Image 1 (cartoon, rainbow, N blue to C red):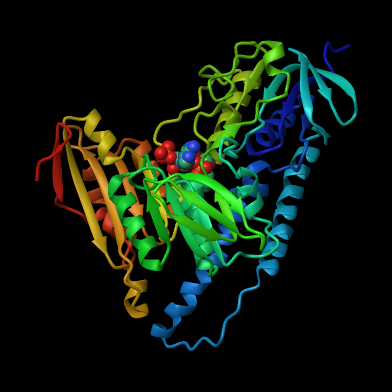
Image 2 (image 1 turned 30 degrees about the vertical axis):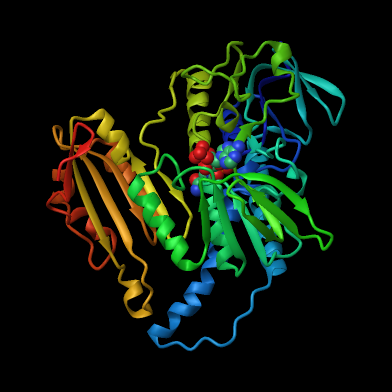
Amino acid sequence: MARYDYDLFVIGGGSGGVRAGRVTASLGKRVAIAEEFRFGGTCVIRGCVPKKLFVYASQFSEHFEDAAGYGWTVGETTFDWPTLVANKDKEITRLEAIYRSGLEKNNATIFESRAVLEDRHTVRLVAENRTVTAETILVATGGHSNRHTALPGHEHCITSSEAFDLKRLPKAIAIAGGGYIAVEFANIFHGLGVETTLIYRGAEILGGFDMDLRKALRDEMEKKGIRIICQAIMLGVDKRPDGGLDVHLSNGEMLSVGEMMLAIGRSPNSDGMGLEEVGVELGKTGEIVVDDYSRTNIDNIYAIGDVTNRIQLTPVAIHEAMCFVDTVYRGRPTAPDHGAVATAVFSQPEIGTVGLTEEKAGEKFDELELYVARFRPMRHTLSGRQEKMLMKLVVDAASRKVVGAHILGPDAGEMAQLLAIPIKAGLTKDDFDRTMAVHPTAAEELVTMYAPSYRVVKGERAG
Ligand code: NDP
């Protein structure tokens, strides 16, 4: 008789947990997975997927405007928020079913329950009030939005989780934060006709991204009519008798809005799961500390995805899941590779980026060549839209390797995915130069920037 009920018990049915559970089960292992809410996790239920659908919805207002230059007359348009929310719900329900059926087809056992560790091999299923045992435990519980409980009036604020299911669209919204979520939602709400203000504590939005992109995106967002207030924080939020909110800022301003959204980062879901009791080491922000192979200090307990707070991105969690399966069940110890991870910010215009920013590359390499193109994409010629596209390649002058690529403009995310391949492969600028352009596209600029726009020597711009 087997010593444990299962070979693997996965806690958390998000992108990372489901992938690890499904693939391990497909290898003939006895797998169980517990999820207390809905399968699909942040990405499917209240993150990437509904966000991208909302981005599409919000872009129609500009599409309607742009149509005139192409000869179309668009009649009066109206937007119905409940229709969007209902259709989004249908789509995530469909995706959730796919997640579940992938597990079921591979004979994984599903528990719709919170799971809490009782000891290093025992899990309590709270909804069923019983315990099961497993040889290996994988924690993939993700993260949650920071609710800024130190802020007076924080209870009146929403986060991205609630933003997807608001009963109605507010007339005006303020969004705190300058990261992915704040920037993406500012564009979504603005595109849907909401008067939108972004409040960011730093000097320039999107810390960590290439500075040229940060500035250019901010310019474009402001040109559209999004108000961006930098170097300010919220001091408090008051609810008015009419249900609206007054948001008091450190710069002395007061904003009157229908909703106040917090997008100030996400924290690991590691509370109340028995982790500390079992002796699993947690870091300063509650993240589960793991080694290069996603193993915790307890050698049969592993953790992947946002709960480990390495890089909070869905594809990273999935990659970590595949490495976990290789390491534990396929006899091929594989450490996740967190280098040159491509990423997109679905702002409007969009950002796609991979590799080092000019600033980071300047710290690492003695001399850089920077290739920069700013131009109006063809689709904006007849539309008359004055939006510029920005493309930038960062090249290490000594090795000629392209070490970073940064794009602002339509389809930048799609381009970043493809650029990740040559950059990951360590290809050089000469390889880019040898590549024939696809014409007419915006992406052709990436292989036709023959002369450097400027150089950076020892971190300083050298003309
Ligand atoms: P980010 O880490 O991207 O940004 C957090 C923002 O909040 C920063 O601008 C930060 O400022 C600010 N902030 C942090 N604490 C405070 C505070 N106490 N008061 C005021 N401002 C504060 O987090 P997000 O919440 O936007 O997103 C979470 C993660 O989800 C991201 O890191 C990303 O990995 C992932 N994500 C990815 C998406 C994608 O791939 N397209 C989309 C959405 C999310 P500062 O810069 O000064 O630290």
